[in-house]
Amino acid sequence: MTTRTHSRVSARVGGISESATLAVDAAAKRLQAEGRPVIGFGAGEPDFPTPDYVVEAAVAACRDPRWHRYTPAGGLPELRAAIAEATSRDSSLPATPEQVLVTNGGKQALYNTFAALLDPGDEVLLPAPYWTTYPESIRLAGGVPVVVPTDETTGFLASVAALEAARTPATKILVFVSPSNPTGAVYPPEQVAAVGRWAADNGLWVVTDEIYQHLVYGDATFASLPGLVEETRDRCVIVSGVAKTYAMTGWRVGWMVGPRDVVAAATNLQSHATSNVANVSQVAALAALRGGLAAVAPMREAFDRRRQAMVAGLNAIPGFSCPVPDGAFYCFPAVTGALGRPLRGRVPTSSAELASLILEEVEVAVVPGEAFGAPGYLRLSYALGDADLAEGVRRIHALLDEAAG
Ligand code: PLP
Image (tube, rainbow, N blue to C red; front, side, top):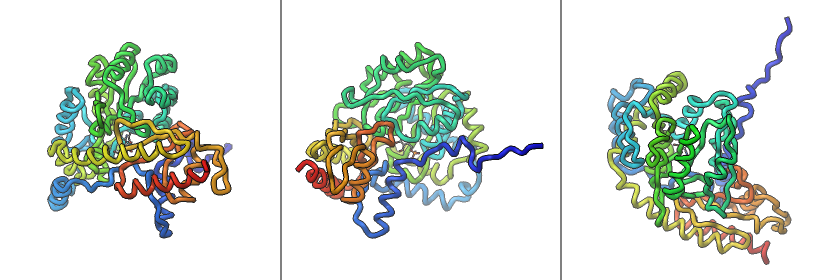
């Protein structure tokens, strides 16, 4: 009998690349640990502490033996009910607790959703620039990401015509994200409705990531795709969580809301993979949701102020061009105008090279567009303190002035 040679790591998992956003964060933290004054625009998390009333609920939960045990894999019943209620209120989608699965962050909700929906070879339309986790999560589930490029000339919004051009008989899912990470783009309600109607007419599933729904600025308004287009609801999964709204990234509570059969299948998967999300975190998320949106308003105001400072600062840098983002907490300037010129003995020819140079020369961490399927751009999070934000932009400006001068 011949023995098969096995690779040490499976092809499926061996093909996953490191999260580029976490890699930038790690590089910045390494330099910080060496004592260098790095300013980090890399992380996708609010700099605010979690609101006190949420922390207090968690402290009480720690002391209650009821929460020291396993609970249902699908989530605490009272939390599922609160999520269903919040979805009905904020996404205009009447939902019941049976349609909710509580997950270990929005990331696990995405993983569960793609695993529950995709068979090998199923195609998934993914507008770019996209958040770096989507293609990996889709591929892990056997799906094939089909990238639909967009750029700043259309406000980074995918048109129905562009989506239709990428659709094939193998297309099963559209990934729809508004507000977007990394661009901050927010689809206007009429375009959300048009995309939703197109998806419904073509029998497509929609996985819609609403994790930034409460971080929208100026005249922009959030519109939920299944909230607007009723015909999509039987084939639509909403992914969301408390991370960005309540400054709770480390607590790891997210959810998926969708048709009962898909949620039941995903719950079975989760029951074998991770079981229930940590109860203390679930109790904290419940307190956050029950507290409504009052705690979000001051954070949104601060983000809005920083957004304006950041856009103005970035647009003043030679070779940078930054559209005004309407949501989330990221700026996504085009930087092609800054490439191809000598800078401190090097000539950066890509946004990835420019990002490395900025980190090494002026100790500012930014994420290159390559991480989001969009070379030629940088992503800068403005979820950091006003003084750091101003100093970070000043350092990049001073560096790029050398190339221009
Ligand atoms: N969706 C988007 C668009 C995100 O940017 C993130 C985090 O950066 C997530 C989902 C996942 O968030 P978490 O897993 O922390 O809940």
